[in-house]
Image (cartoon, rainbow, N blue to C red):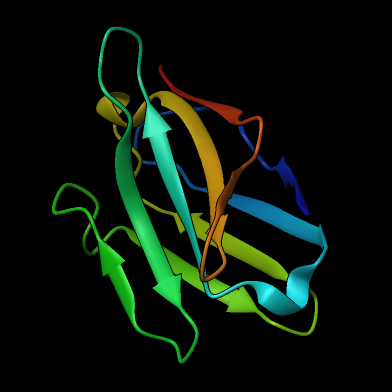
Length: 115
């Protein structure tokens, strides 16, 4: 079992920045991929950014050049640095990690971009 705790969400003005963190605990030795999804009201959950062991990262086209995912394996933590935020980035951001056989979700953290 893996437990996830997210932090770092909040209210920010357009053009601002936030950094999300997701700390994993439990059977962290089995984690292979870590990433962030988001879900806005009335929309489907979408992948924002993900990284696998070894460092390769993927990003949604809508956030490329603005968001950066990073991973501290020693701390079992994945981060999402979000710059140049736009109102359309408003959503609940959920951390996701997976092993070879199962995935785990965090509870989510709200990000609201508004003036």
